[in-house]
Length: 148
Image 1 (cartoon, rainbow, N blue to C red):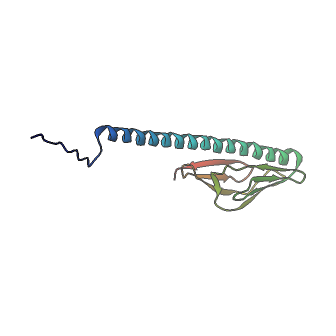
Image 2 (image 1 turned 180 degrees about the vertical axis):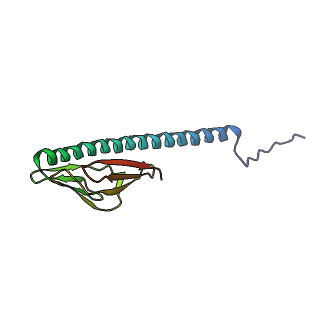
Image 3 (image 1 turned 90 degrees about the vertical axis):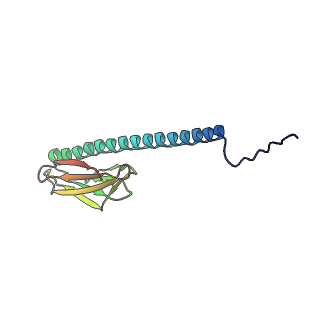
């Protein structure tokens, strides 16, 4: 009597499982590489922003020292940073990843002095905090980048 083989499949074959694992791991690798590329370019954007901020700041100090013009600097969430003198207004676009903790108005007086102040920014990229620390006197500041 011929025996009939009945094929009952209740799972995946080894080849089907390997194909599934290759597809899933490829997608995960693409997602991870894409996420790193985004954060690297955003971090470069933040660095470029701080370089531009330094340039605008130095120009405001120059206007005060050599032309006796005070500069008002306005920092608001979702808006460019505005450097305003009596006859000129310059805007510096803040990266979307940076957010000031609160609205601030800084004043570089006509004798190139400024009151001490700390302005805090948070970054969406790696949850870091930037502290713009303005020291008393001749418009000196530094930016501290702190880990979250």
